[in-house]
Each structure stands twice: as structure tokens, then as C-alpha cells.
Image (spheres, rainbow, N blue to C red):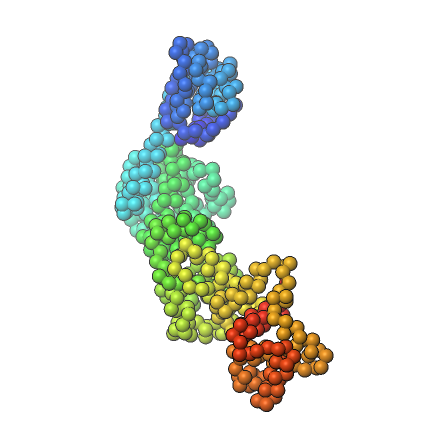
Length: 516
């Protein structure tokens, strides 16, 4: 228990009118200061010192002015040691200082018990014990009853035996649900005032059932999934359970989901891990998370990003798109991220026209979907890098007006490189000068030599294919090629010339479609 938590707990029993926290250190023991201290000693950092300044003088604080002191005091005189900026201290307001020391001891014991209970709970869950067995152990120590329900009132787990005399409760628990009256009571309170875990569980009373209970909400994926209750016929709950009950809810929630639907738990674990990696957690942490989560990635993989070309409504991704992708690629990993469906595909599935990819192409045409596929990679910790490739393939395919629904980053990487160049760079200066010569000649003479050279270049310098694409007679194509050579001095047999023309027309194509 740290000093701030200790003061918060102490203030439930005694007023704390003044306090100062230099460093929120942990506290494990308490020691009373009384009478003079002839041999000054440095304070022990994790010890809380208590003093009544009306019964002990300043000599009692001798040697305690060093860093790391934790002090609580009563009485009318503030100890001078409290002037040290590195001392944690608090004043307790009471007319009877005698019982305070025992109260402090009780608080620290409660804290140790709660920590021990937490450790035992974790050990039990990690060793594979049934949830109800774990709850039963806790309930036995608390002399109470623990119950976990979902929002419908279905009983997910409970302690055994049920320490209630209420016959309706006993019958209902045996049948696997909470009494309907109690569920209505919970709903009424939720509608009127709500429940919050921020202030810790509060004591409530159900008048119809004559029961008292502590309650903590179970939140799954930012959605209220259910509640964990500690229920009994007395309002006297051990104080540590107000803080410990939310912990039970958080730890037990995953196990409760596992017993109800293991796929749901697995899906949540997978979604959280993939989302964190896509958010950009460090590669080392990503690798550790992947290892501990047990998520299996293909040895060689690609990222595919799928998004609707047009708005389909708020629920389309989750209710329609994701189930469709699951049917087409049943063994792949999926997550919804930033209004996209992100799919991790095996490299063979992504890069060859498999039956799955053919089926997906048909679905894209039918549903009007756009997909981008990254380059292959092997390290899943680099998932974000290749996700960005896939999203860039989507955006560039639209910017460059590329036909089709599925687009590969490798086919658009050149345009990505162009986009990454600073705006101060004048891209046209990197183009072969022949392009400018032909543009100017076409403007003066009304010819189409520039378009002819572009088609000839983009057709791999195959004159027959280029003439078909331009709807030209072969002799016309021969004439235009000869004219281009005469004007520019190009040697189409030179491999370097061919390369320069290819990248020049790619730059030119990008500039024609650039939004910058």
C-alpha cells in the first residue's frame, strides 16, 4: 500500500486535515515514536512512523529528518521535521489518539491480505482452476457469497456454498440464473443513478430480497458485459473487498468468457494484440506480445486492407464485411482498424490467383470494395510497416485512377516514392528531355508523337501491341517512330534509353494525377 492510498483509507475513519506527499512510497510496517531518541538513526523507507506531539517532544524525531520519512501525527504541534521537502506527512484529527495506532495496523494488515488474495487468485487462474473454485476460496475468507452474471442475468460463475438463507436465491442459483426481482432491482438502480467503478464498489441494499451487496461492473471491449457481486444478509463487508472486487471482475472476466465461448476470448486477445501492433508499439514489445499471445502468423505473409468504395453504414464492416472475409479466407487473421478490415494472408494466397482470391475478386465487384495488398514479409512485429503499404496501395490506386478492385503495393511503389519526395523537388527535371521536345512539337504541329512514344514505351517497346492500342496502321506507326528518332535522337535499341523512358513516363503519369 502506498502512502496516498493509505491516507485515502485512513480518511474513512479519521479526518486528515493536512498532508504532504513528496514521493508516494510503499508502506509495509508502522512504528510509534515516543520519548527521546538518544541515538539518532536514519528512517527506514517503507516504515510509517506515528507520533502524538502532545506526549512526545522534538527529541523523538531526532535523526528522522533525512529523505524517505513517512510520518503521521496527532496533537496541536506540527513536528519541525515536516518542513523537510522530502518527507511524506499527514496530520490526523482526533481527541483520542490511542486507538489510531491499532487502526493503522489494521489498515496495513488489510492491505497485505488483499495482496495475498490477489496473488492466490492469479495463481489459481493460471494453474487452470475452475472459476467457481476460485470464487469459493475468496468467499470463504470473506464469509460471503460471490456471483458473476452477464447482462441477461445468466449466472456465469458463483461461489459454493451459497451463504444465503433466501430460498429464492438458492433455487435460482441452482438453475443458473439470478432471481428476476434482483435483476429488475439492478436495472432500476442503473437507470436512476448508474453504477461506476471509478469510486470503487459501494454498498447497496435490495429491499425486496433483504440483501446487501457490493457490485463491480465487467467491461469487455468498452461494452458492459456483466457484474460481479458480493452478496450477504449483513451490511458489514470487509473494507479490502471494496478495492478488491473490481480486480476480481477484471481477472475473472476472461476466464468467464472462456467458459462461455472460447472463441470470443481468443478473438478479443487477437484483436487487442493486432491493434496494438498496428498502433505502432515498439518491435521488441510487439514480438513479446505475439509470443505470449500464441497467435499464429504465416511464415511468409502479406497484409491486405479492405474498405468499401462507398459509405455502407456504421455497422457494415462488422456485420457484413468481416463475416464475408471470414468465409472466403477462413484460416487468416483479421482485425477492424481505422475503418478498414485488415487481413493477414499467406503469401501464396495473396500473390497468386488462388480460388480464394478469385472468389474475393468477385465479392469486391459485387460489394464495391477496394483492396490493397502489401509486399511479402516474414516478421509479424513489422505488421504496421506493411499495413501502411497496403493502405497506400488503396489510396494511390484511386489517385492514379487505376482500374480494378485489388491493387498491389509493388505495382504502385514508384508513385509512393514520388509522393515522398519533398514539394521543393521539381519532378519534371528528372524526366528524359525527349518528352519535353515531343510535347512542344505536338503543340506547334498538332501531332501526337508524345502519346505515340508513351504507348510504345509502356507496351514494352513492342511496336505491334502499341499500334493496336493506338488503333494505327503499321506503316503509320513506323512513320511516327522514325519521326521521333529524328527529332530526339533516341536509340530504342539501347537498354539504358529504354529504362530512362520507362521511369520518365511513370513520373509524368504521376504528375498528371498528383494532388499536390
